Image (cartoon, rainbow, N blue to C red; front, side):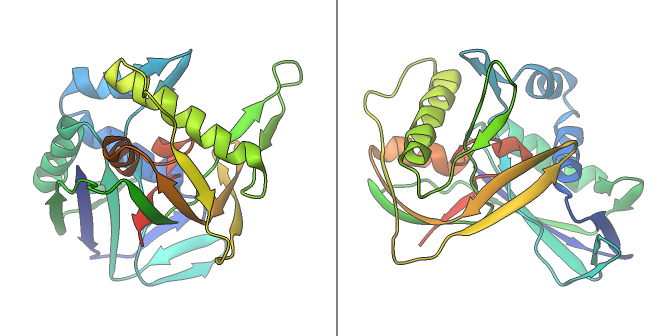
Length: 240
């Protein structure tokens, strides 16, 4: 399920350039109108192999903006999208935004327009373009150092499949019976992004990919996001 959020600003929205953690907190605050569910998503999520998956993703903020003193400033309106395979999460968010508005930091915006969709993928082959950059990584258990893979490495695609497997099992309790075929569209350039999320740096990629597999698996990825850190604002894609 998908929620498009449009905010008409009665005063400028001023955020740090790396604002993902702020938008994530907006979502957590919204779903906390049902405390048990909000606490479950925030504190526990869906677990598999010692990893937690929150089962939501959000895209980047869209709107006219200026950059000043390492701040991004939206003047008139801003929009963003949230997706999840869990309908309750989307509906709670929509209800919260509708009745209570949206608060960024200490600033409340009440002029909010919402669009709710239940789009499902019906194809078994897709060409996709990232709306927010995709990331996959491995952490050395000894040194604690994190290595981020790039789309020119074969392991990048294996890690995408591994991540899909774990998320699917965490949510449905059963494993996919076969992996996806994932490849880069060689005719389109990739773009590397290094962004700060709280106290760490994340390397991610804007890339165009080819996906093939069971329709239900592709639909699951459309709702949850591709790769890691979806609930931190990574991995949302659109179908070309």
